[in-house]
Image 1 (cartoon, rainbow, N blue to C red):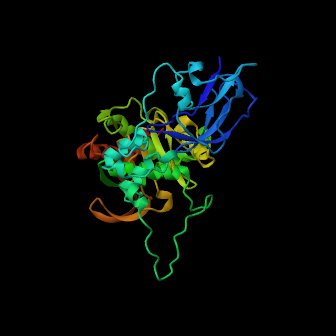
Image 2 (cartoon, rainbow, N blue to C red):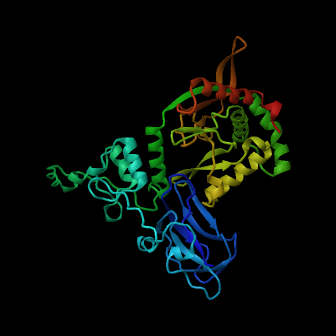
Length: 415
């Protein structure tokens, strides 16, 4: 039986994926587990494995196409087999290839959502319109056939989307004084916004405007952290072939604290709190024109050397745009470290549905009061952003206090 190749959903609320490249061409023999295609999401470019054996055929999407999640874009066929006439014939249980294929099924398809003005609107866009109080009847969609997309809602919420009435308004009279029009960064330039960057902008705007953020900050004496790292550098290099960083120790300390504070490791979704069964710490990593968050799974159950090794491998794959789906999914908490950019302190925006994100500044010698005397010690500032729907101030403060205690006593637990 033919196996359908569909545009996968790699994260919550994902509606489409961009096909970056095919790793195989039509007519090639494909083995299960081989890399079949690359897709781009809001977080990274990821490689997708083949789900079975077969000959690649019936390819309907080309490189650069943006395809709805669940839509069939190719088939894996047995020798002599032809692609099914429609998705229903394959009995895959997936979404239909097209409206025509959907209509061929016995059950009538549900009508697409429409706005009050009659334009189509995606379910995600409708949800965002409710959350931001946007009147969809006044909008002109930028999608195919005037469909209202999520980005149209976010622009309207920010005051930048054209309304239906504005679209029909006559142009303003030209100014008597010539002006230089604003320029848009050309595609491919360092200032151009990638598709990852555009969706990241949408997600951060949504988080900042819908998640009730609050912040707690601590200054950490890094004397013990520096000394312990210096002692462990040769040990980890010998055992794991990687140079351990301050970030690795911070990841380990945060994982220990998350294990003690399950609410901080929880998630807010569908108006309820979910306590996650695993501690999966994500690291924000800067790549070209965007930021991705790569995940170290079961962080509280692995040693410092394994954390360092995984962090290095994830960073290398992120810089090469070769992150796998498993690398960017399942995070329960995020760390953003800007210390390498000499930033003293900052606040970070939460990645929903996570309950918090820790912003880490640079380690620097600072004047401090210690044991009743003025001295100079290496310190760093850490700021916790928390979702007030999941944790209150006392819970957040207790969690951050345990992170600081772990960093102060790092020599006792580092392994």
